[in-house]
Image (cartoon, rainbow, N blue to C red):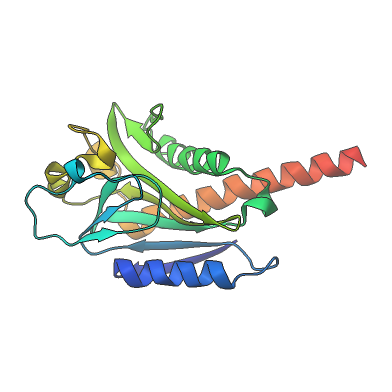
Length: 213
């Protein structure tokens, strides 16, 4: 699985690049994880509703094709976009979401932070506050978009929206939880955790197949 570190890049050109990569890939195309940050932007998933939109902000608002509702991206947030062939890993979309969440939780656990999930609300939470948001799009069995982990950023823009469609939802970041990583370091560590999680699944299936023969 190839990991690409893109630095800070604009949102819309990056989404276009993900779509192009997904449309062009064939059965043998290696999966890729893109590690990056975005300048400030609100993104509206396919389930977004008007009542959750920004109430007062000069930050751009962009409608996109991932699942989920509204979220915020900005400097200091580690984003990993996950371009995976689900059939290659024998994954359903729900399983892929769960494994990405598990990767975030493993990364946080390595730094002494206990995190969990919330029923019906994809993402990762610490003491009820959301630290990582997740939204995917799957076309022809291949995923794009991914996960955003709050590292060390200005959280104020979240106060102008209902994060992920939940009024009053608290958000947090790993800097406030005592973790001293840069967004680039956190993004790379998360990409490595996702890669290991998916590769371990592939190895388990390969072993099971050989046993059944």
